[in-house]
Image (cartoon, rainbow, N blue to C red; front, side, top):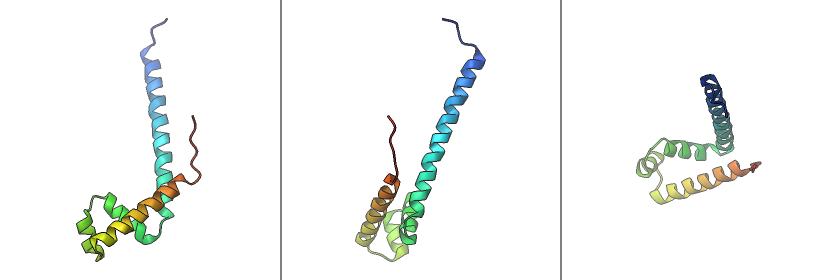
Length: 92
């Protein structure tokens, strides 16, 4: 077997990186579409939560009890997952 030259390795690495970048972009596009299908309140609560705001801080800023916020967050997550699954196909 011939030893591969440096440029062949560079091309293979570039193809792998490009493929990964394209796949990542498709995933983020799908995620953005799923988020945009949510109502405004669900989008806001998920974005704020994903940005790292604690439940306590979020419940105070939204003037909701922690229990109410947990229900809202749970419902928003469930809807996001359903939106992500719409039209999703797995290739094997």
